[in-house]
Length: 112
Image (cartoon, rainbow, N blue to C red; front, side, top):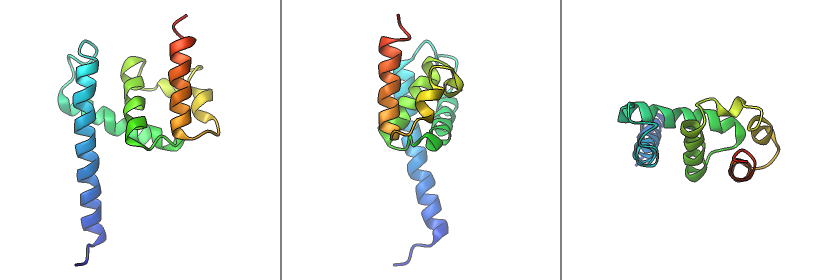
């Protein structure tokens, strides 16, 4: 059996879209008030945007992409350009380490 590149692209898109749908449902459950006016498709688009925006920072695992999307909902879609997030995301650490550092910062510094 030979799988052509076009078929692989369609499979990748299907897997990513399924992931985006799952995360969208979780986000709507986590943030019911913030997302109450957003349709499921709008939240899925936000997850796709999180995938796109997180990639340059090394945020590529499913768990980290979900966390990145949570930050987009909790703070703002372009939170990565804020003075507190930009230096963390621009650092040389792995995507998971950056997300951990953001978690620590928002837990211990932003909420003071």
